[in-house]
Length: 259
Image 1: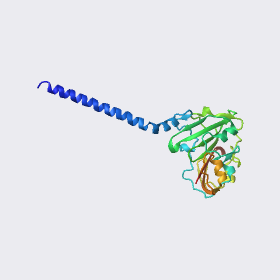
Image 2: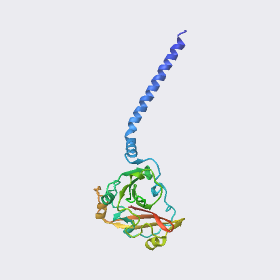
Image 3: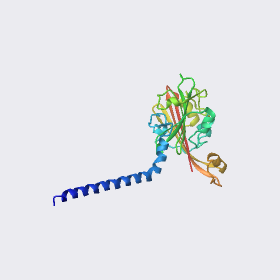
Image 4: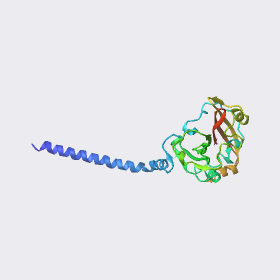
């Protein structure tokens, strides 16, 4: 009779231990099962060049654009308006920026964010350090952008920008919008702004253009299921121009095409 409670306690302990072991093994099983789903995200996030902050104050993808609520103008710009140094936004859909590197030389590709806010970036700076001019190209899943600005504060990764003699205070788009331009000079090229704000003007354009199969193949060289007919793409362009003393110091141009 006296041994009964002790035996019951020992059985309860063994039962508890068995249950814990069972759940422990089950937890390991679930972890192993889900590991392949977790690995791609973690490998991408932790790859060399990943920045875990949003210190890139100049990036529209980081939510620093004034174009969000701008009036959309139903017209398309000439392609030269989203080209700089002969580099056209949308020419390459690779986050490795082959077209940029071919023109400006090798540079470190950095990444930030996750999901819809993920962005790959490559940065070049003026050789003349006193000018503090930067040209940065950026890509995410659907949008290609470049940023041209002078001055401004440093950010995490700004020390990784490659210096180039092609970057200077006189640099501008192939359409002729350059640093130092007046608001009137920008409007002479782009037309009436969609919206204005303190020391800045913004544009939002939308339209359609026809893409031939040959052009599709050039833009998507890895695709094997090429269309056999022309395609109509919706083009969206966002432009943010900022001024100090009526001189252009920051220009952000984003371009996307959706079928």
